[in-house]
Length: 230
Image (cartoon, rainbow, N blue to C red; front, side):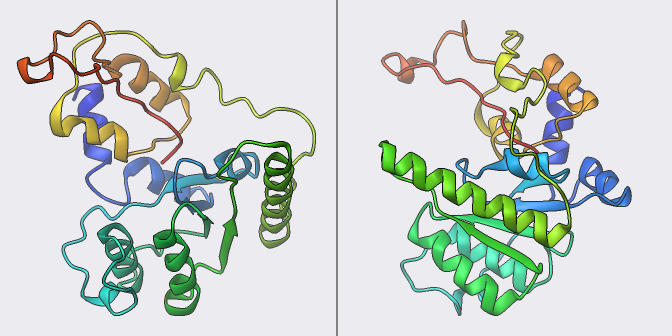
């Protein structure tokens, strides 16, 4: 099995072998929304962030009853799975005020799903300014306090969290990833552990240097970005 196949295999279902192994060892998993989620705090607390997705969902029958007709299919499918008890492996959820759809999902999740027991909303600023930075700093402090109190863990106030080399430095060009294969990287957020870093080193195929398709002659070339965990 190639490195890309490993990513694709993990992306097929909500629960994968790496996540299952983590849970069997007593580890905690925290669901997160949006790339703005402060996953570093979750990792610093000794837990694994899981990007919320609705892989395997075939319907929104249950979710439709909780949302307006203008709410997107992403949150409908997510909440449908939640009501169908498909996120039982989660120990907590960290929502972000990224959009009205996610904010409504937060309200519905607290009222309709009722679990996991830890459900937190972290607000992120949508502008860059001194006041916005201070607000975000305070919001991170609230999340840190909530994680510590609920899970009885300690997150250090000082020092930087360094996630090894990180996928961002793994720029080896091998063969191109195109079409649906890119979703294996974009949707699946895998563990920051030795095995997964090896997969990324071996299998992160960027499109740099690959001739574009004829219809894309005047478009910027795309790059595949692997980020966060599980």
